[in-house]
Length: 75
Image (cartoon, rainbow, N blue to C red; front, side, top):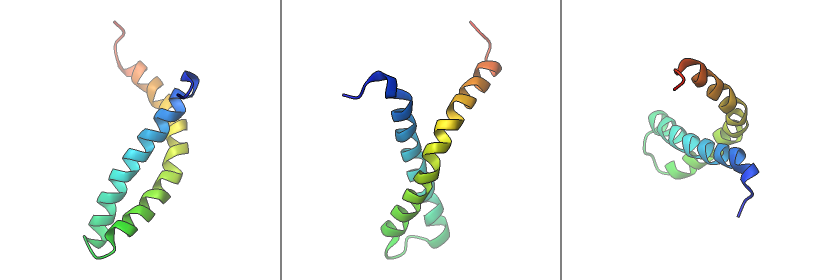
């Protein structure tokens, strides 16, 4: 098991991986269509996107969390 202190990093890794997978798949399909070799193109686009998405999520998530706290009324 991974220690709890790494939960935010693991969350960022999983979230950025899933989101970049979906977005790169949609973008790749929209640009080239479902052509022969599509899976290889998709994986290449996904890995490139994930390389950027993961550190961006680590920086953006705390900012987004603070913004949401300011926009939502406290109980």
